[in-house]
Structure formats: structure tokens, C-alpha cells
Length: 150
Image 1 (tube, one colour):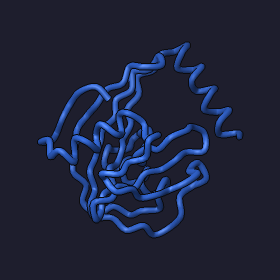
Image 2 (cartoon, helix red, strand yellow; image 1 turned 90 degrees about the vertical axis):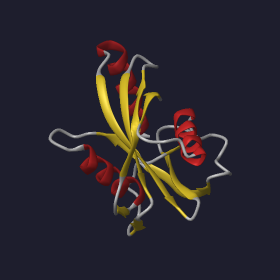
Image 3 (spheres, helix red, strand yellow; image 1 turned 135 degrees about the vertical axis):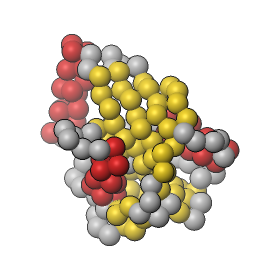
């Protein structure tokens, strides 16, 4: 409940200050299945990811977020693309990585309500649209890196 209150407070902050934010997402795929998370403070399914911390590289942020949200240690990651989102008073920029070499070694942190793998051709109905689009691009074999709207 406390995390949900913080999330709504953050939305108010975004409305007032209109920040420019940079984040990462990791498309974790093995055996034609993608690992997705459901957060405690928002409905729906997402690729693991989040915002960069001060002094952190994109690669470091992707690895940290995957470890925190899925308990996975990532091997090689490749860049899929950079995507922008200007909804809800935000100026968000998501850098998406693909990782097919990972091992889940521990449990997700407290902000994750559920971690689950889904067949790429059977994604959940309530996966967020930007995440669905990226996974569909991956399945279609679209050449990377890509740039565009989230």
C-alpha cells in the first residue's frame, strides 16, 4: 500500500515539474518465452526495468533492475532501441535491451507482486502496450537498434 501511495505522489510530481527521465527495460527471453513482472503498485505486466541512478551506466542499470525485479543475473545484453513516451505529463526515454543469456538465482524484491514467463505467442492481455509492441517487433525480426515512440 505504501508503495502505491508513493507512486501516486510521483505522478503528482510529474504533473507539476514535468521531468525528463531515462530508464531501461530488459527483454529477457529463453526457449521462446519472455519473463514479465507484475508490480505491486500498478496493474498489468511489464518487462523488468526502471530508472537510472546517478553515476550508473545503461548496462549497469539494466543488470541491476533485472536482478532486483526478477532475481536474474544477466549474461550478454544487446541494444534493441531507444523509445520515447510523452503521456501523463512525462518525458520518458526507455532504452530497451535484449538478453537471452540469464540465470534466475534469487527472488524478486518487494515491489514485484509476480514474476512469470509467457510464450511469445501467448502474451497476457494486460501487458502494457509499449511492452507488447517491442515484443512483437522482436518476434517479427525487426532489425535493431530502433528508435521511436514507446
